[in-house]
Image (cartoon, rainbow, N blue to C red; front, side):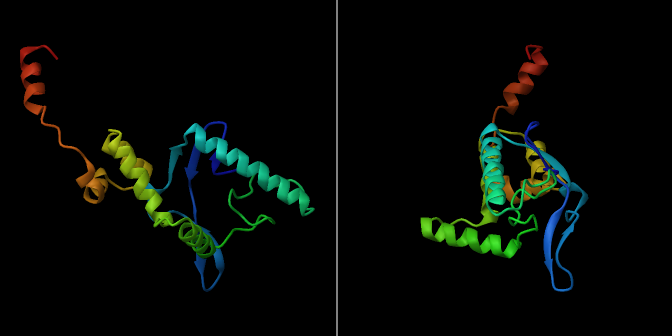
Length: 164
């Protein structure tokens, strides 16, 4: 898989898929240069992606298509062609409705950011993971989630006293 390194637990965001009237599905660069980034993956996600890949291989073999090449898309059609983003969005919405959950695919991005903020991760790291051009963008969107820290006076006093 070209954009995912499961052994290194790394997702490389280097392209996106867009539905166009003229050319159909086309790959393009991210909207900004900051959108091109590498994101570390937790072990649980790597395990799920490995299981998904195994299922894909089994499905391809059952259809007589043979093993998928290393460059195959993680969430492509069985023949290796890209899946329509609109179809995926509709499938997600149907699954969420059936489960009684109000969640869009984009809300997963917000959940990811909110969880990282709640864990105390720094805004620069979060901003880079989200592909924001600046931590100021992250703060504008998610600033209300950051806890204020009133220890500033104590920290400065300790620094002046030479105890920090």
